[in-house]
Length: 98
Image 1 (cartoon, rainbow, N blue to C red):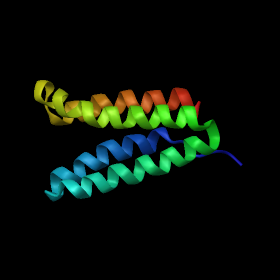
Image 2 (tube, one colour):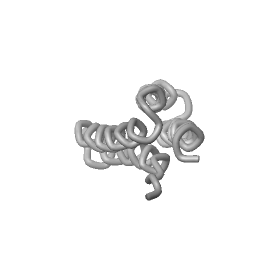
Image 3 (cartoon, rainbow, N blue to C red):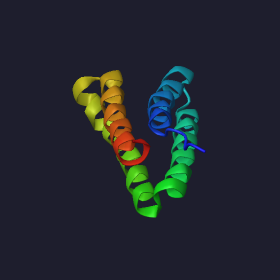
Image 4 (cartoon, helix red, strand yellow):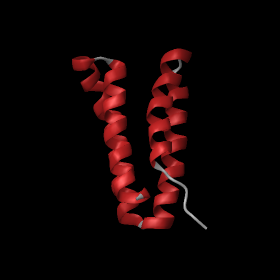
């Protein structure tokens, strides 16, 4: 049985979390989307790649989320979200999905 790709879920979690928070006006709903995607991915990474890769990728996912905030002050909100999403999804693909 093939393993599901996680990079698209990483991207959906970051972009979807931001979009949910922005357009609903409820930051906590964005956090739910972000956490659900991150939790699902972490479970998949742990099962398929082990705890070191899972911890590293989850850490990268959380750093991407955190880095988007100060980056948004420099380049704007959506460009920031897209930039950190590309980095996190690319790292995920290279480390877990390839």
